[in-house]
Image (cartoon, rainbow, N blue to C red; front, side, top):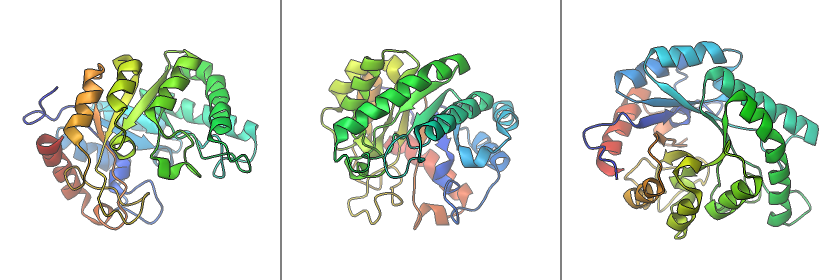
Length: 286
């Protein structure tokens, strides 16, 4: 397992950690200021959200690379199914393709997919996952042509109803095997997998080349909001080193991306202090 105690060049920032992905939160730093702050602190990569990019994907991607940062992801695809998805299949696919195009223009290595919840009226995770697989398979050729990997991100089961009917790494790996295209991979997020005792086995099935990213945060024992109360690494109950060992034993050697949704705590702090603490916790707890 890699030793980060004296080298944090594998650390990446997901800008959600500063609160800029949700209206009314965060200090409102422009992408350029975030890029400079990460570069000054020795981060190796950065992940943006579509709302921050707008029509400036090429410009922002070039700015990040000029500062020495790799754009290692873009968040995210539209929800593909469920109550939060757009009202028609055509609208979903149009937005899905647009998100792939934005990732390509940004120079991001992957686009994160949050698949959406159970199809309304179906009461069926299985049927919902079949629909997701159909939509993802339809998008794969477009992603391959654009040179962008698609990263299925299984979410914690608490989100099954509205945000993700894909709740286990096992089901994500099954979908990758069924679609059988190297452009389709899996993103592993501590917040969503810390409880899953089958994680090492499923990641071995997937292999390192099938892991598109590894996302860091912590699960607070007394979390007050399952969406917006993630912990900083070391503040919760997740076995961070055991999870990373499973990811790296499977063959992953890429960035470790800090992604913390924290409306009542970290999003209220000075972003410079948050970034400094991210570096310190990465070196000491991850």
